[in-house]
Length: 303
Image (cartoon, rainbow, N blue to C red):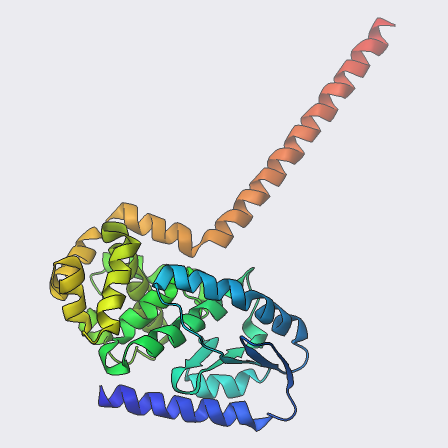
């Protein structure tokens, strides 16, 4: 835990340093709920953040059960190299510093897919909420990331190269990471990092699937009252944390992993479906043209 706190302090220091590096040069838009600072040419993204913020806040109230009055500062950076230095990985697209009530986003990597900016913003706002209500030493990294992926719909703060299901492959090769190993820092290796994120999301999704969203919120309520995760799981779900992990691992059947595969490759599947529909439409049109031509030829022969 000490190592995790040290690394967190280093990240916070770099974030604050980068946030202030071009502070006066950044543009700013704000209202009573949020402050958005942005580098050129990301005015459109900044306006999207300002517009999306109230709706995301309402969604988090419903999903997490907390109604808090946070006014975060959100910075959209164009210096991707400096951001990568602070993040420690070129896969990371955003960082949250709950101590500073600050979110930094690599704006150059936003909107790679539709809704990426909104999903990433919601993910980072979730981090601020969790750390506002739960002490850091009681919030394991995997549960922190799992909850934030649960509310944002996936690996929102990292760019998973190719969106391949590393979780499916790790399960089939018996190389899953234990949740005990994911309590503090996540692995720095790209593939192992993605696996850590995927496992975290999968476990929280398992809790929702078996105990409902209310089960997830009961755990959060226990933790906000001072319980650690182990006691919160026992008090909320009437099972131990070890038993929860065993049940989750047993649930990773082919059906579950196929759903994971579909979710991880949704965009590619939709694009493939659209391409197939285009091809099918072209074939139908060609057949109709051929039929019309055959009918015209028959009419000419009759005449």
